[in-house]
Image 1 (tube, rainbow, N blue to C red):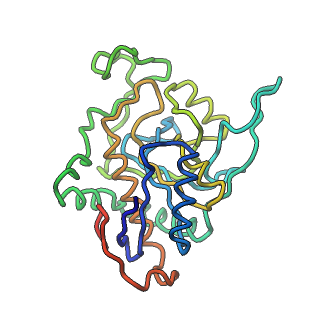
Image 2: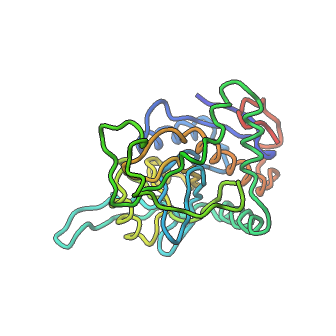
Image 3: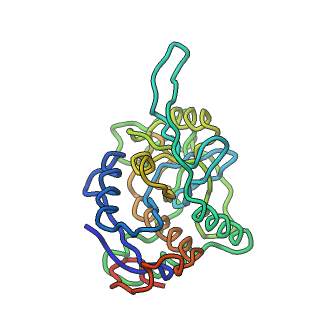
Amino acid sequence: IYAFGRLSGHNTVVGCLPGTQGKGAAAIGATNMHRTFPSIRYWLLVGIGGGVPNHENDIRLGDVVVSMPNGQYGGVVQYDLGRETRSGFERKGFLASPPAILRSAVEKMRSDHMLMDNKVNEFVFAMIQRGGRLANYRRPSRQLDVLFKPEDAHHPSQATCRNCNKGEVINRHSRKSTAPEIHYGLVGSGDRVIKSAAKRDTISRGFGGILCFEMEAAGLMTDFSALVIRGISDYSDSHKNYVRQQYAAATAVAVAKELLSYLDPRMSWACNRKIPDTSLMGHR
């Protein structure tokens, strides 16, 4: 199932995985999309992910991570591909960096955001104003953004964190801006959902600082050169919940829309003809 529209002047086609997740589903979905639309110029993988908060990266729920090269890694790390040896886990294979034209657009956007706020709030608000079920994508209360110490484990019998030990909550400073922040760096992609703060931090440190985890990018990046954009919906720990998933999805799409404004639509002949707009974010 595809949705068509225009984002920042670009003809855009959006494909959604059919109720499944993982790199296999992503690979099949991208292959089918490419077969149907062989003239696609830019590939963006947009969705939600689990953040890796620490002293170096003040990542919060609703923030967005954009995959960019860091050190020896191209932007996405398939952290669980390899084999166990006597000396430990030996990782195999490397995934390519995003295309140079996308990396250049990201750097331009990043530079602008040093002087002004990003447009995430503007785009999400405009989407919500369209009414209907889009109201479910509004920003939840900040009181629901709670980060527990890594050693604190959520009790499996509790559906929410209402009865969790508040003494284990990490106090964080208030931000000056209400706009979600955009972080640039490594995205960890694997076959399993990370729900352990200890494992989260260990894997992240092992690759020089993974910013978030997800499950589809490795399947797409094997055959397609893409940029990954993930809205942070949880902290990859045992306190994972689904309260902020819709908002995180909206912030990721908003960043994708803003990023496309840094790419010249005239670079692609496929943008010369306008197509009907069926997108949720609206055209611009």
